Length: 338
Image 1 (cartoon, one colour):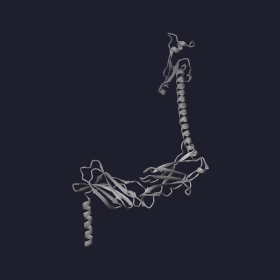
Image 2 (cartoon, helix red, strand yellow):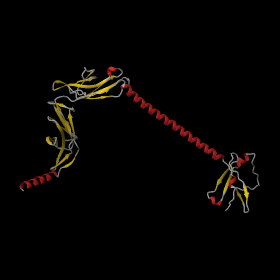
Image 3 (spheres, one colour):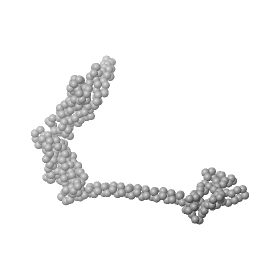
Image 4 (cartoon, one colour):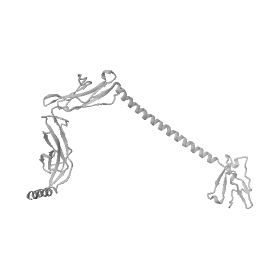
């Protein structure tokens, strides 16, 4: 019973002391210097945590264990400060920024983790085959590795058991090189790999071989033809689009012109007929002419049976086959109620 009471008291104390923590500070950045994938046992490993103001403490964690911290005065901080930690063990590291204000801890979330890997040898390099060069007869093979501050060399192999075909010297921390390989001869065909060498703790070390990549004869030509084919295809699509658009514009303009000409030339010959009640226009006697200048029309309300015709006197005067005499009465339309 007593033990249970102690546990409850501890839990309550933790809740009371932690309830005032405020997580509102900017998230810190954690860097590894140098950024090697693998460190050789005994090498110096530096972690750098960058906190943005305001803060008064930078805390390091190794896994879930509190490792190291450093306190700072609140006022001198202008933008950010870095705190360096020298790591000696393998694992995941994080850091956190804190600021104590009015007996309350303001905190940031923990940084993204950084993994430190320790081994007895250098890391394995990576290798990739690049697209064809403009010469159409060669490709690029790039190799990447952890060159130390003293510089080193990269080696390219066609067969991992033969002597290297190419060797490139590099300067301090120059981590990537590109080898040019001609693919027009059978001697260039094969499975390529690479490795690098550098000085670690005063002694020369060489990395394991990278994975292999296959190179076949004419590989550069095939990749170039692929790019040329894609470019030609895109050009053909653009040309077809321009041609089809031009045809559509010309055809649309021609249709509009034909409709305008037809509408302007249409005319209707008016025939007057009599019935027992009155004189009316015979709707079945309409025809179309090009020179009479007569334009027919139909009333909107068809139930009234109204038809009308508009005479263009200027056209009639010019046409010798038709004339209008002064003093005569011309009947344009009448209404026939049915």
